[in-house]
Length: 380
Image (cartoon, rainbow, N blue to C red):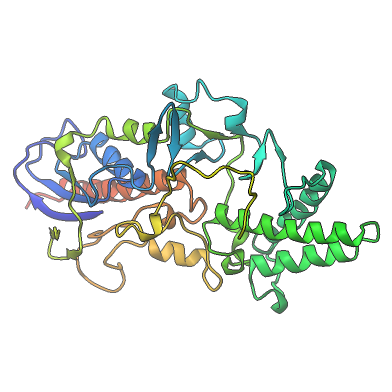
């Protein structure tokens, strides 16, 4: 988001309908994802009218992309509403009737498993033999117990031992392996099965953390991500319906698609430049896959805190330019939003939405302060 030069074309006041000032700030929002659309919507609701949204691709939504396939909706991007109580995305969807037809299978009351159905995971060995349910549940209890331990380092200020290399994956693997190998009640075959399940669980965890490997996720910072209470939901009609709700009150002329921004000039202007599997499983007739990592305007799915990084890095990423203490230039020329800029809710759609509101509020407050300063000047 960029706050640009003052325009004298409008007589509308961005702060109050009762104030008829002659200058409107010109604001450019770069990206029409959840953060950008929310920021734009918030600015418009506060009376700003000289707003332009530049979207590099030919569609809005960013990392939300719902595809209609026959009678099914497939999500190539955001899928879950994580938590309900106080989650703005949940309340937007619920108030708009998007969750009315959510089934039990589309709702989870706990942590999500990519391989779960009705809360029970089903596992098979590489030769197709199903692993007994009680063994799966026993291992799941052990894994979740160790998962809770990974949260304590940040939440309780627990020191991280050097042997873990500050890595969630290394710590989890070492602790779970040790507990498995020291269990006197398990046979050698059972221990081997559980160790194999450990690798699979860490793969699932890396999918949920959007990391290539849990070995790359910072153990000391892992507990800072904050979970909103309540069930997880999917939207039967597609997550794009949330995007459409955010965009419906934004005039179409304000959103310019196919406009990649490769450079931002700080002189109050912007520049547009253009292993072997189960042989009994039939081969798919068609494959539809996401490619966020190779998308030149996305370059990844969602963020995580890497080993060597911290929540402070997230806050620095969200700091507007120019930095207030380093220059006498006008403040808030370039602002940053998106899920990766939210310290507590990174990697989520509600983090993206809230970050958009946050940056819009910065601008609204700045212009309110400027107006108040001008109206309280003594007459000379």
